[in-house]
View 1 (tube, rainbow, N blue to C red):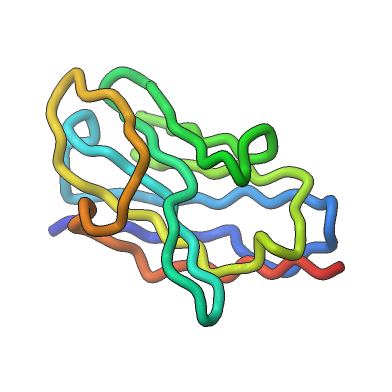
View 2: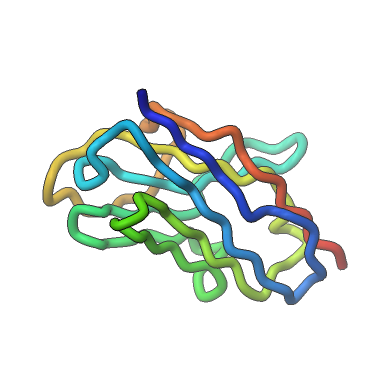
Length: 128
């Protein structure tokens, strides 16, 4: 059974940092893409970042480029989203998601309809 468990959210002041974790289990890490999405109240869910554990490639949304970094630890089957210089507009529920790809697949812009497995989400609130 595929499981994704997020952690690391919280309340932070503007300019601060948080690191989100997504612990994955139940699948072969190298054959899946892992992505972070976020959803603010009353807004659509949007892709933030994606990583391919097969070749290490990443994609970061323009809105967070230069502030957010995605990475993974293959020994722990965990994907991280390091968020620096947070802004109030980053406030949202952050969710990680996984989808089957194949060995050698390179990261692409994540769209939620492509992803089959989802975590429960973690709240990030940035105060001004």
